[in-house]
Image (cartoon, rainbow, N blue to C red; front, top):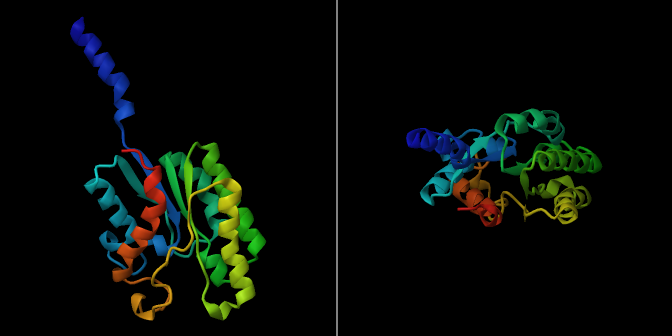
Length: 201
């Protein structure tokens, strides 16, 4: 009888011991475009969590070329699949590069955030900036979207994923758009500063 009770107790506690999921939801900048998979910043994040014995499983649902609208269309299915405790939301760069309407970008991001909250997932927002050739007016409004959303929804924000090297061509691949391997640890550190306080050891 005692053995049976022990089995029951272990069975009840087993789900509690499962690692929580941290979902990275972005575009090619987070999908590791042009890089060995284990060298991209999201893979480096998984390795850091392991090294520091922080019990999260990293799921990378980033897709090259993804826009905020594309992300919105697949967010519910992605949340249902992974059931993440934390979502690192890193979308919008492709919208900006294509000159999409800033208000539409805002609405899409807010809808994704709302879906995450309905699924009981905490959100970390990752901001983006545009190159100067897009014009100061549009570029300013674009970046302000992230600042405004973070303030409105009280979200932790990393203001710029490419902080520290966005203006250094040598830190990018030949296309001049996607960060090179040397930039990946810097990207991880940028995200980590905002993400780390949310992680429970």
